[in-house]
Length: 383
Length: 149
Ligand SMILES: [Zn+2]
Image (cartoon, rainbow over all chains, first blue to last red; front, side):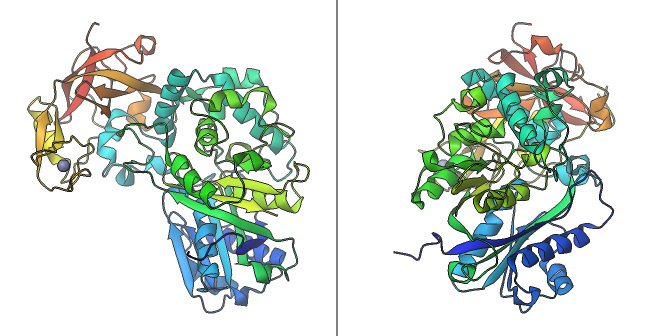
């Protein structure tokens, strides 16, 4: 039996910059600020950091971070691909490195000026090569168009409605209204606003799409043993998984038997197999929400409901505080900040510390997911 | 007449090149395993067969018939050439011979008609369509017309 990652490591520090449509500082500076804030939260000196993990899309590399913050000798570093699908895997890679003795203090981070910087899909030089030859010339230009295609089919096949998608947008907005750090703090959403908003790619409207944000976040991971001596209550990494399903094609997952069962299903099978508890024992979830339809798809994939039941699951306030499964309690990518899902990791930690601005009473277990619809990853956290 | 100077043209790679070559002859062909006893269709094209790992492949002619599996109607912000056409449609067509292969394309009223030539309210999941080929700045690209307009 191989060594288990179960509860072998813990997140002991989290840090973030302000979130805004435009921040004056560079991505590199924001990254350093978030990393240092997370180390300060943990009470660990930067010179003790010997492992880094981030996304392949992260533009500040570990060399720059390490020398800027004054890290010591670094013995593990890793980058995970597929945009927001990599978020939870950054923590997973560090957990594996630390549990296997390759490093002792790991920092994961993401810094992004997506609010004031360019929209990636506008760069036709990078969007045209393979496999874009099969989609882009036909005007499927943006992630929103690619996911809207799956969303339309999902709604057709299972009877999911725009009201179900509104339930997702509303739950995230309501939590953001409780979170002073959220972009959408003090900006309530109504059904009227949702139903009359402009289209982005039918059947998705403005409020089905995440924010465009400048900001950075980081967290610190150490062994469970070390965590007991840290300043904060440890939040244990109970289970981690990545998921790349057989014959999956990324966000344009149009060429296999079942495009509507995506990477979440693959990650979930491994995640639950390695866990001491199941979906019904999850107190709160942070589910990647670049687009509202990813929530019903993820609810199905991670086993909170049956196939095709993800839309109906959102009814009756199920996603709100006090509901069956409170989600995205900081406001998520839809209403707190869109930083490729890293804010969902830190919000999971806050819930299990009992310090969220929308605290779920006595939350002891939290699922955090990365982007569904691309090769993904997920984390189960426990206090 | 070219539909636009600036709609994106396919940037063809080595694996995909035969698809576009056949398209220029007005043929819709999909890559298939050429190993006897296998013969599985695969899309997008790739070097070897995921079922039997054979590197031998052929390009099998399709009837060009299919059904709309899903569709979207994009709105701005978009690249300028596409923004001029809103609301246009982008559709996924499941091929009659290989329903799990769903080609992205556009429903148009005639082969060289623009991407917005069919009103969005005419789009239906399940509608039967037939491939046609349009000239996009010198490249033949598949488009789709309703079998019963
Ligand atoms: Zn074969």
